[in-house]
Length: 607
Image (cartoon, rainbow, N blue to C red; front, side):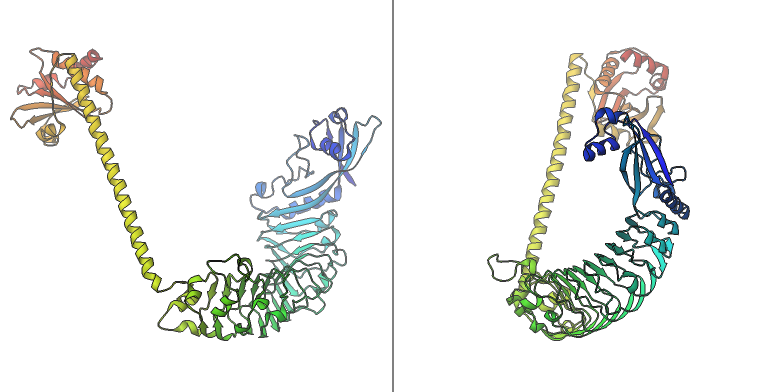
């Protein structure tokens, strides 16, 4: 049974007409402008999506983690077609406008098929399991459900009813054995089940027919036991193989038929015996065989392709039981390696750093482009031999001064000397310098510190000087402005210094306060010449501009009356405004200066 969704009279640039014009080249503007399209979904595919929604109904913040997923919106991929349809279902990909045909003679109505082909949900916090009904979506080619720690349960065997090319379920909580899908999965290209809780034996029967597989990753699960000898011989197209962090044992799998492998990771298992034979692989870039129980002497050319056209750059054989003689290392042995890790093995004897330098296997701080040795892109950047039994290292001063390769020998007998030297500091602590150059380094540090300190001090002094100059210039400007204004009105009030009035009132001590009104407080003050004055400090420090304050001083200075106290002078200091009156003992100051009504009238008069 099919479900039809009707869409009519969309603009010319909408997707249906655009695709028709681009791919079919039969659509004209007049036809597209009035075209009515039926989008036909397979009802079983819509039922499959609804089953997923039901199984994941406990997902938190479902309106964002599963945006667009709801029971009322049956059609997951029609958001851009008409405004009255709910948004697309997050992560659902559809193949639309397939097998379209006109259903009337006027070519104004057509019927098209829509198929669900992909489901991609990353870090969506999905809670629940994967229901069997996912098999209803038979045209599903991509299933990527990753980073959902509460997506659990076994994988449904009905996945074999889909058309998957990509099955990526890494970092979830799926469990149980990997199901047997029969021969239907031979077209699968990517299988990533890493970071789950799958168990059981290596899924040999389940994957043996996936002959086109390019990526196989079952790392960080709980697969146990040996890998059968022919397990991977048919999967010759592999590019990446990751079986790390399981409990696989026995000998390493045979990989001779996989010629194009680029990344191999068998680390953190329990493989025994000799290293696997990888000499037929020319494309290997990274090999990690660490944390197993491999044994035997390691002659790299016996296990890895060391021809000129090989691309192996990273090799990790740490935490095994391998032995090797570094004195046999040469250009043909190390080839293109840039990182070599042999930590925690059984390597003993002498490491000849000078010989490795002479062979051009180590990076130098100064590289001669005309040198016949390997370029810096094909020599070691890291050589790690920690926790072995190397007791002697041959090197000279130039090896330490010019070494750019990181050489790590921690936890070897060589590093156990009580008296450290340049060699132990370089190869055991990765601090490479010559002792004679230490004093030069210290001298440079002192010189730099002195220069920085002097420069900072000069900047500080210049800043202070600029600030002082600016303040002095402003004071001179203010003084000139006051003098010009007083000369203009032929008044000569005394201009008092702020420090003089501050001393006269003992820093405006509360014991000397005569009173307080709405606009300021009046203090009794004694000047250095012995004269007693009434000093009024205005409250509103920022409300009066200089011009307004001077106008008030000019007006008060010119007013003479027997009931008025004479204004003797004033003071302007930044935002401070002060008036100095003669002091009267018979309380006239309180009667005159602090009467709010009089001051308000005066304020209106000034204005």
